[in-house]
Length: 95
Image (cartoon, rainbow, N blue to C red; front, side, top):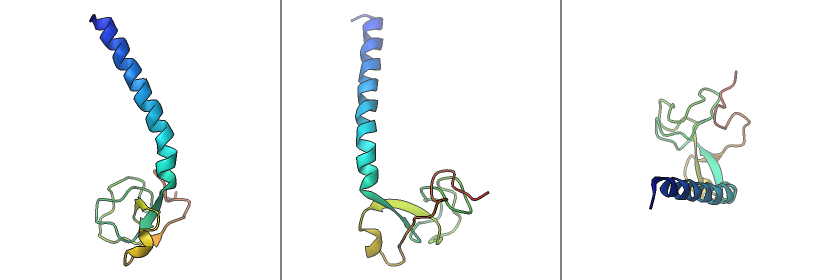
């Protein structure tokens, strides 16, 4: 197999993988919810009114720091609360 064949096959495999990932992402996101108040310091998934970076929360159980969990799980965790705020997204710090 020549180098150009390997490059073409690799590029094709990458495109197929990206296409599959793009189709699965919306379904996975629909099955998840943002749960705040349960995050360990430095483990947030991003987007608070204080921070715009993932992993940037300095204290455990910050009431605004959130992580994605499967739907229905947050309500079962003591201290967990669902987040629906506009800033709760990557780059979400209020300006």
